[in-house]
Length: 96
Image 1: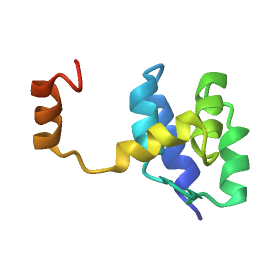
Image 2: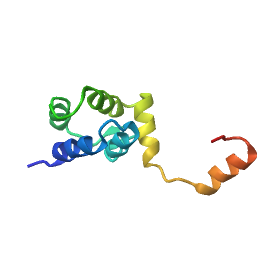
Image 3: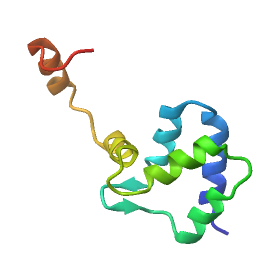
Image 4: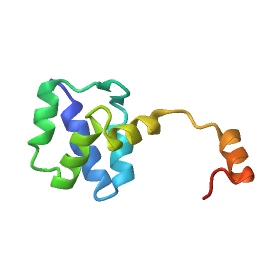
């Protein structure tokens, strides 16, 4: 039996209303050209009564390539270059 929908359900329960945490969980399956969910998994997740409407909407946007939510989720998977962030902060190019 496929455990992905079960994992997503547990992740949704743990994330609650925390948008960023929910996207961190989803980002494990999201990539620049799509996602790693099967069509059946997507339908199971979107019809899961334990997920809130908000979580389902975020999930659906995160797995849709090119949406702002998808791009954000993809960026969450990218390694962070601390030196580059520090350089941008010190130069004023990036503000906190």
